[in-house]
Image 1: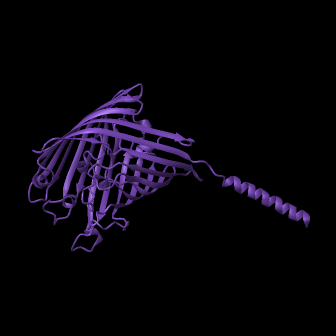
Image 2: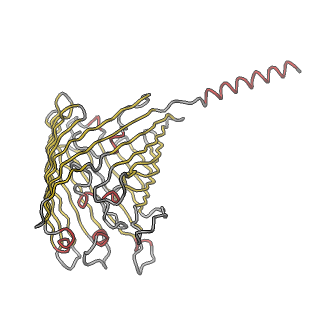
Image 3: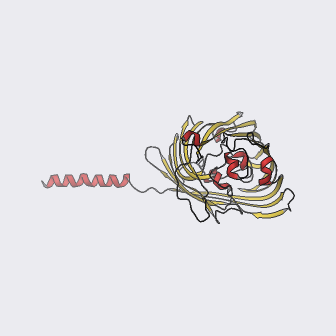
Length: 397
């Protein structure tokens, strides 16, 4: 009897030791990312007086943790905030990244607050909202006061990668809804946008293999609106289609040229035949295109200088008045040292039709900028392809 008890205790001890090792705490990889974006903006709106503004919007800080899981999966938690635009009503700071992510090499599940699928590709502008009306699907639930409301929201996204090049994403999102009254606050976080996207993306490590096609994709976004007089979900859905492509027209490792293009077709609502506000602009039928040509100089395999020129055009074919807008953006950036850049950007826009009452006939802007980026990690467990700064807008890369 005593022998049986001893054997049982010995077996239990082995199980406890094995269980303790199995569930031993594994220290996570710790990531810190930050980007300081400072610029002097010289603005001119139609016949109004010129103004100069010291701008530090889109300066951001992120902290993340990555953890090895069982069965080849890995987990990730990210918390990040940025400083919104000066005329924003979002407060001093805005939490734009708060999410958990689980995935392996072929599957990714992401839930929390992050970048919504309002655009497929990133263009070489100083800030990610410099060409927002041409590069992003506009949030029809917003008053338009805050550009962040068309870029960030609560997301539930499932991604499957075929052969490490074909990306299928299914997403449900909650775009921020502007409260009807100033004293009210938003408490409903139900999904108000559903969609999917399919993209062919060449891995970053294969960019310099002299292939012309770097990326091509299509996306479908459907906003579930409160369209008056319609009860069917299909009739209440505001439908948008995005097409994008990136071509490496001269994929030389030193003198690199590429062309980026994106078109957004908004099916709109037929009852919107004039524009007097931002919500009407987001719900009117429209076609927006944006194309950029970029030259990148890489010295000793490090990005050193970049010059780009972009053209954006948007038209509203179903409005009573002929309405469209046109934008030209040109910039140049130079890397002074590791992750420390200086740049200059010029932007000119023209408005016609109903948009003149909102934006004026034209506006122009010159920005002189300094940008500093920080990307650090401790207790490294993974490669650096999933850097925190990949979540932020970039230009020289």
